[in-house]
Image 1: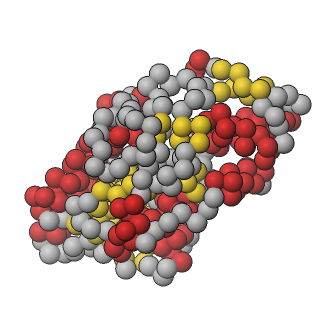
Image 2: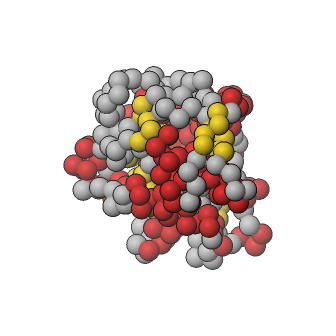
Length: 316
């Protein structure tokens, strides 16, 4: 299968590219022009992965990137940081919502011209559910985003599914719950905690800067997430939305403690107002029964294994 991965140079994109290559797919990577390496080498410096320039805010760039026919497309490229989206909500909407609309329209044009009829996996976020009861979220639950990031990602979902209804483009939406692993940067909570704990250990200190530690999240291993994406490319039902979730929640206070045990620090949390998210969702855990039923997917990494992999990677 010939697969295009947008955002192939990102955290999840890199893991997905490696997974698809291991399955012997022909993989192409699309990313922002400034990130395309000189000489046209693919993401992760893999010569077998050709790179395409893609600027989601530029309609001409999107049309050029999708002019070539593909059997499948995984759309990961996005403003992926909640803090970055909050700093410029308009830009987040331009990339995450309008950018996704441009991508699916370019693919729909190719379908109308009979160049290709790809399976299109649009990767969204569990944050579209917003606040709600402290029970695992299902795809049938109402959506109520409470951040520019979540709202813009929901806009992308709406654009993608509208294209499916209007043109028959084979769109599947994946709502990924929180995930982590080697290579994730410190804009995200688990690697940020691990890094601060390491700094505290080096300084012979227990003090660790934190925000609100009461929210409950789940933390899938990135390998399990890309396994779900690969399965959805093969078996997802067009027009449907699937949670990618473990169903196992953990309070951020407990996450900090477990990471501290791995690093060798008994943390003394110090609340930094700059790290507190006023619109944080108190409980965000998912039910992936629909994904399991359709694809047979189940996470293979425990939370302890996931956190150990993250900490070991930072040590390297």
